[in-house]
Image (cartoon, rainbow, N blue to C red; front, side):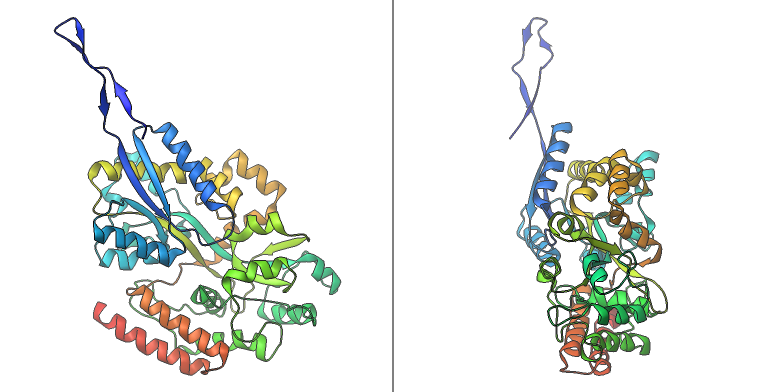
Length: 420
């Protein structure tokens, strides 16, 4: 461990005291690695830069798998008494973390007008999941929207305009049919990993949110929501443009790169990996709409744990401020595909030059105009699991959409009733 030494004052007017080691603040940060790209190296590089500028703070980053793995491991560490001061976890975990009294609002950590202005510097759509009952519990960092990736070469081959992706559900079906051949599908939407996320995108496009903004109510059995799940299933069973059953989140990017599908919906966090590995001309577009355009935001927020000492909270805040600063956010966006979390990030020379050369890097940010907060309620994990199971039951044909979503709604009502 690097330590800082200070020279003591002269003692007795003549003698010098021996150097005394100043105490270093040690931070443990849990971090999710769930999407493509060399994320560990990027985060390690940012942390190293921070430590170089802040030699009185050391940071141990623990890479803990996907978002659910990260939450489980971080909370297990806290429960066992292992030190952990901050983490990047799901933006949608905020309700559960507040309920368990594990995190502190940033209003209790920041000081002065400058830090208050920093708190207000992020895109409002990315703050929606972190602002609850007038306080800010999470700061956006690894953030995304769902975007549509498409193979322009396949568009040309099918006689479609390679610069024009589907903008409506009808166009999605029509183009999907033109792109489907014996060797490939026109479209793949993942239905494992985060099926609720894709479903929320489809539902908002159909004009209906799946939850209220206070975490207390879900609308899974609303006719428009049921119709949404029926449409998703129809893409395979009726229109034949997507595989029947489920589509794997974890292997979909590779399926796209290998030409198994002409279009895929996925996180913008995959953008740099697709850019670096695609051996064909590809495009990125906003998701199509039916009643409206729309995508939920996604990804992770920084949280500070309540057990951290005052000194550790301030050190954690300094790390978070550093990692979300425009220059770091720009570097992060370029190297991963995730969004720069503030308008100022897109005003940096680095990101302006990058987006001028590679305009697809702006699609996720531009889609914020149509974005909604990602699905989140009290008892989020259990409510979300019920919705995920319903989606997969309908897509695999074991239940009708109406039956599956009705059961998920009844289970959610039971879980949420106590919080009302």
